[in-house]
Length: 146
Image (cartoon, rainbow, N blue to C red; front, side, top):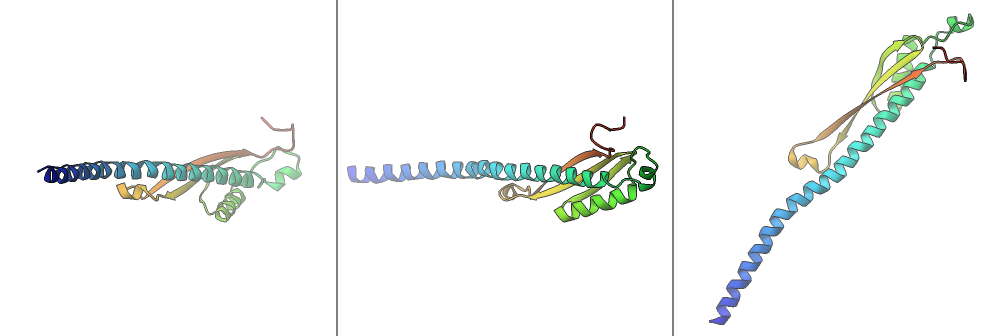
């Protein structure tokens, strides 16, 4: 009789372990997914900000030469600025472009999409982040126009 009772207890314990494992594994996968894909999203955000900064700087260098030759304060050429920003963003593999030109100031917006690894298991296949940057053309150090 004791022999049969030992088998029954062993079966019950194995079932309890499987229930615990079945509950813990999905929670663990979701936690790992949040860490991995959360890190990927932060990396994508850094990439979008870096690209926006670089494109804005390149665009702000595209000043109107005719004004500069007359000694007037710098003013950005919108067409050349858009082209310079597009070339910079293209080289970096990032979507975006010039969102505004106001005198010597250029604003650039970017967008980066991160393809998730673990979060696809719960229906989230990608995370999109965006960034904006602004740059201003100046004559030289200490000579910025108001």
